[in-house]
Image (cartoon, rainbow, N blue to C red; front, top):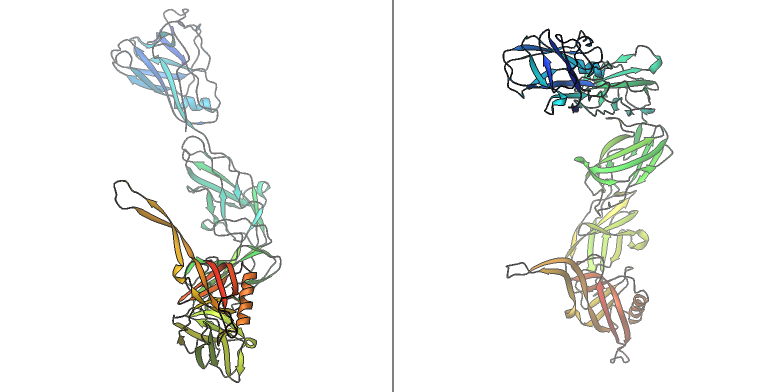
Amino acid sequence: MGSGIVRAGNDTFARASVPSKRFGSTNWLRVEASEAIAYVYLRSPAPKGATITAATLRGTTRGTWAGSRTLTLRPLAEKFSSATTWTNRPDARSTGAAVTVVGAVAQGTTVEFNVLSSVQSIANGAKHYGWNLASSSATAVNFFSFDSGYDSWELEVEWADEPDKPTSQTPSSAAVSLSKPTLLFDYTDVSGSTELASVQVQIDPLGAGGGTPDFDSGEVVTTEPELDLSTTAYAGLAAGSSTQWRVRVKDGSGLWSAWSDWATFNRVDKPTITINSPSAGVLWDSTPEILATVSTAMEAYRIRITHGADRTKVLYDSGKQPETGTSIVWSIPLRNDAGRVILPDDSTRWLNVQVWDTVDREATPGDPTWTQTWTQFTVDDDLATTPVATLAVTQVGDTPAVQVVWTRAAAADSWELLKDGKVVETFENEDLVIAGTSFTATFPDTESWVPHTYNVKAVVNGKRSTKGPTRTFTTQVEGVWLRRTNGDMVQLRGTGIDEWVQMDRRITYKPVNRAIDVDIITQLEGITGPFKGTISESPTQDLDAALAILATIKDNPSDAVNLIAADLRIVVRLRHLTVLPSSSFMEGSRQHRVEFEFFQVGDIGYGVD
C-alpha cells in the first residue's frame, strides 16, 4: 500500500462585503454564509492511475467556535491565487463535494473532510485546482492559513496500484501430457492490498486473433497463482493438438491487472515403458540386469530400487543415464554406496523405471517431464534348484584352512560357500576336486578358536539352491600365521605377541570445579607391534615354499596380508621384514629367523578378510 501526507500549499479567502479586496497574505481563512469563502490547494501525493483507498483533508481551527454549522468542501473547476477576490473567485465543480458538521470547538481543533472522491478523480487524470470551503452559518469562523506559522492544512492519501501484468507463464512454448494441465503464472503487486484474490484465464487456439475465446474461466477465487483446468469446465486438449492461453489477476483491493500475453502449449502423450525383467515378480540373482523397452526414443532413463513396504525409502539409485534408443539394460550392483546389500535373499522390493523422451516438455503440477512405471518383486535366490545332499568340514592339517566336502546328484554351474550365513567364496567346477557326486574345496578360513557355521549353495542357470545342510566347525592352530590374499600362508613361531597394542587418540578436558577429567576419544587406531621368531620345516609346511612366500611379501611391501594369532585375524602391512638363517641352523633343522613390525589397515576390528 502507498501513502503520503502533504502539509504545504496555497490558500486565501474572499468576502462579499469587500468584493475587490485580496486576502492572500493573511494568517487566517474566514468562512461565513453568503459572506466569506475559503480556498485551499495541496497537491495529491498519489501517482496517476492509482486506486485511492483513503483521502482526508484536515484544517485547524483558529479561535473558539460557538454554535453549529455545516461546512461544505467542493473541488474547484478553475485556478485561484493570492490575487483572488469575491469578484473574480473561481467556480466549483458540481460533483465531489465533502460535507462535515462542526459544533462548538476550541482553538486548535482539527476538522476533517473525506476527499476520496475528488482525489480519485485527480488520480484518474482530472485537473486539480484545489477546493473551496463554505459554511452554512452566518456566524463567521476562522481556520489557520499556511502563512500563520501554526499547523494549518494537511492532505493524507492512501492508495493501491493494480497488480503487474503476468509475464511468466507455464506451460509456454512446450508440451504437456495432460488434457487439462495446471496453468502457472507470476503475481506481483507492490502497493495496496497486495494479496492475490482471484484469477481469470482464457483459452483459444487462435489466441489474439480468435475473437471470443473458446474457453473463459470467469473470475476464480484463489490465493495461489495457478489454475488447475481439471477443476473448471474446460473441455480439455486432444493429444497432438496445441492451443494458447492468457491470464489476468486481481488483488485484495479489487484491482485487475492487464491481460498477459498469449502463451502456446501442445499436448504430446508420454511413452509407454515395458519392464521385461524381472517379468514374473521374482528375482533369483542378487546382481540382476534390469531390462525394459520404451515405445519411443529416449533422452535418458533412471533406475531405482526401494523398500518393499515404503517407496520413499530408496536403496539404490542409478542417477539419470543418457540413452538415445528404446531399450534399457542396467546392472544392479550387489551393494549400494552405504555398503548395504540391495537385494538380499527373501526380501521384497519395488523397481522404479523413469524415462525422459525427446519431446520438449515443461513440468506442471502432476505432470513432470518424465514418465515412470513401478513393479514389485521378491528376491528368492534358491528358487527351484536342488540343494547339496551332505556336507562335511575338516581342518587342513594344523593350518587355519578348512576342507569342505559335499555331495549332490549332479554338478552345478558353480557353488557358493557361506560362512556364518554370508557368501565368502564362489567356486567354479574347475576349482574343485570332483569324484563322482562328491565335491571338495579348500577355504583358507583364518579365524581360529572361533566356531563358524558352513553351508554350500548350488547355482544352476543363475538360480541358487537353499543352504542345505549346516555344519559348525572350529579350527585350532598354534603360532603366528601370515596369509596372502591368494591363499598362500606360512607358520611362524616366536615372541612379541605380548607387546602388541591398540591405541586410541583422545582429548582430555579438565572441567572447572570438577575433580574428574573428561576424555573424548577422537580416533581408534589399529593394532601394532613387533614379531621375533622362527620358521622351520613341519609336516604341513615345506620350508623352501614358505621362504618363497615370505620373499614375495617382502618384495611387495604395499600389499596387505592377514595376520593370524590365537583367535585374532586382522589385515596388516609389514615393515622391516627380515628373514635370515638363525644360530640354530644345522643339517636336519634349517631354521630361519623372522622379524618384522606390523600395523593394522582397513577396518579396525577382528575377523577382517
